[in-house]
Image (cartoon, rainbow, N blue to C red; front, side, top):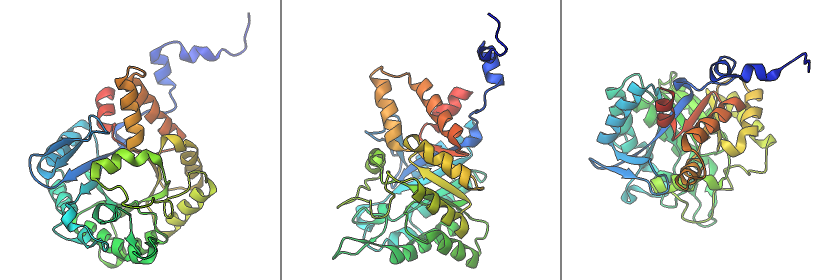
Length: 326
């Protein structure tokens, strides 16, 4: 049989497949989320995220040094705050001596070149577990009052030495307010990685276990996006870019690869995608049961996220992947 074109020629061996691979994972692709707790000498395995840990600051510094040596250049910080500091104003979030602020300073002292990104939302500081200030009578999350609080939080992170703030709250108009505040307060070099298309997803459950930050009532559907919508994601992302976002994010990743691609096609700034805790937990659970090969599944999953258009991937598997890649 004579064929003008034999497509299988470039699939003949692993070496050839590697030569013509269109999408390749590298250390530069990854952002590793880190969970930080008060106290000392704490390494707590999160039950719903087997193999992943919440650490005290001293243990976090050890981990960050190891991550840098491995080739990870960016981390995204989340903190678990004591219940005694939680209220409906979020004032602990801009405490210059708060856990987040101390963590930023300590990490930048320990590994100055590490790119430190910080979560900006009120849920770790809220007595109600919501990302904003609650109108107690109606239960509604107040937009403008929340943006005011988050602006103070963002400036405190910048003061502590953060390279990027990463607002995950999904309040309207906050990116423009943050950019203006950063410029006016001597932080023109601090970037904004906006969670521009963050969906109200069931895949966040293990994360909320990790930080004890599940909403105390209701859900987050009045501010996080409806997973049925696509055009809305593009509109919100374009607005964030216009307001000054340096990087935009789609969250979650695996169930939203179509959104990742559409956002990538719509903007000229870098696009990140968050491979979230539920996506991590599903792979871990299936691998534990012997239904999937964990290493192969992780590599295929993360490659698909990059292939869809993500320039950066926030994933709990980053350390594992770099060890696999050698």
